[in-house]
Length: 228
Image (cartoon, rainbow, N blue to C red; front, top):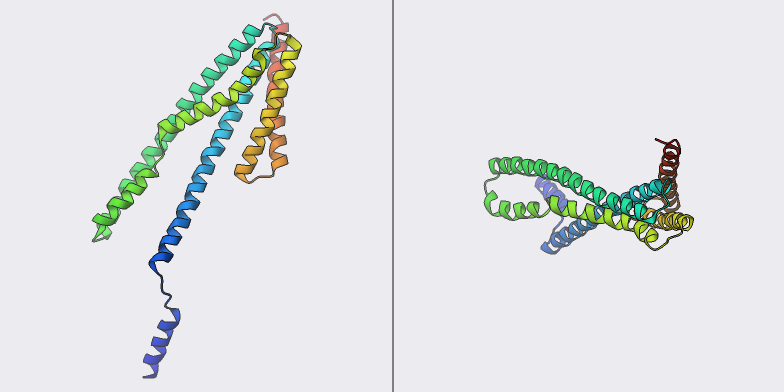
């Protein structure tokens, strides 16, 4: 009797009742954590895309501004950079995410085959789980549109800053100031979303943007003055 009593006591000691409410609560917590992580990744990608559009378009405009004082040439260059960059970002993101989609779909099919071999009653559970997996799959068109939109938003900053200023030197200064302010904002957003040091992130983005504009301006000025 003693061993049986000890066994029942051990079983009673380690048996932890789990109710349906506990399971639902845990599933809700997991879902909220997943949703937050997914939103954070999308927002961070949008900030990076906008930062790319800001720096590349501003650098193009500053490069043309180094050799041409005409506002029309500067605006047309910036607009061409916006369109080309947005299309490039959209196509690149579409191809990348579509490749990821193919990989995840192939992995899902392999997992479903393994489940069918190992589980006896997979039919009912497999349908609902399959629907959840399909909902979590990446959308190439959505990713492409988001990348193009984010790039365009960033590229609009130097375009708008230069559109209404005729004076050459003032226009260059206003573009540089507007881009610098936007770089600080994007650096702050990227740091908040990535939980990184804010000041270090802002300075890194700001200095990087300044270097890109300065190098483009300097090299274009050098090539333009050489008569090529």
